[in-house]
Length: 94
Image (cartoon, rainbow, N blue to C red; front, side, top):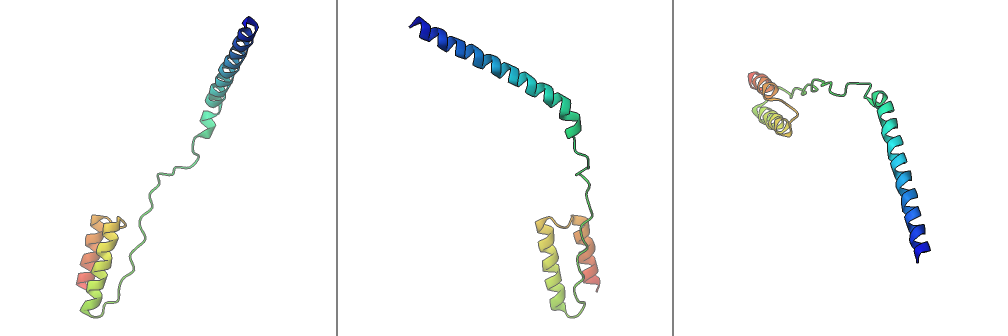
């Protein structure tokens, strides 16, 4: 039984040492390569939304449909409040 216990203890020591060395190497490599892994491009650039196509300026039914479409775009978050108000004023003015 002492030989078995000695073998298990030796295996535990070897495995523990291997784990410690592996973790230390991983941390060292992580610190070494961290500056190079930073994003090269700024992904926070915001582009203006595409303009909403103007609906045909005939008849009152088209205006209502255009306003409904505009309200749907606003509820989806495509248009801001300012853009919504500007487009609404343009539709109602035509």
